[in-house]
Length: 296
Image 1 (cartoon, helix red, strand yellow):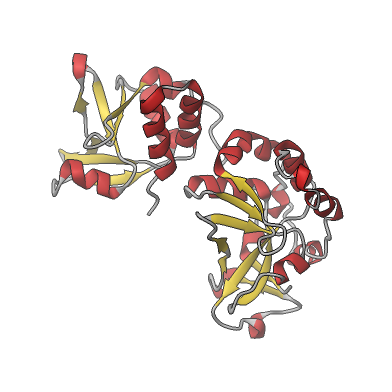
Image 2 (spheres, helix red, strand yellow; image 1 turned 30 degrees about the vertical axis):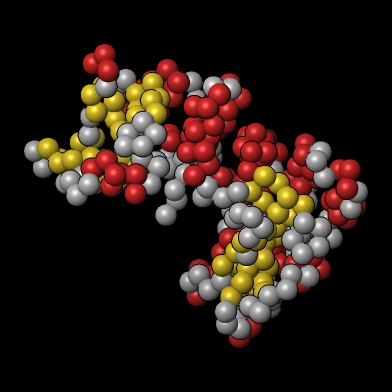
């Protein structure tokens, strides 16, 4: 269950000092949120619960997680629905609701209509290509050495130059490490396993370095440097899709080449540059790459 801890922390930080930069951080976190909205049945139809605020404001309560909803409603007859921020923006755009109140039993934070409607550039959620890479093409992509990227990160002074790093990443073939508790080699044909036929038989390696970081790699050699007792496979990824996934799943960021280079990209940097990833690091031909495991 996504608990939106980064959003809650940003709100707490803003309440402490009112820094405008933190307000921007809150807006960015909201873009990638999937908050819970309560509904009740009226005449057999579900309707959003309305909270009466000060000054006759009509507000809808939202919750970061189910525990927060339980604090407020207890065992009441309420159904909670998780939706993208785009829906909550459209609700205010097409109704006379004045805004939302977040976690009213604890944070009790008010988001008025003007603030919500000012948040534009909704993240991309659907990727499509009429000409996706074939499985064989994906396999060939794993042979990329990405020498320019590896030369760049070999210089410690470059690591904090995120704009240059992201530019290198956008021009590289990025892979993730997929792990399985069982040996899947018998299911591969010509070095490829199609999970559309087998179902999900492996999961992406998440690096735990003081948080939850999606691990990405610049080459097969870098993947093979990871020490694990599980069986290892590769997967080519669309970097834009991966960044949006990391942010939507409330993860702490991305780590490039863990166990070798250990280049950490924190969540706040991904939030700041997320639109750039959609524009410059979105190879839509990789739309189906998530279905294929590749031998490394």
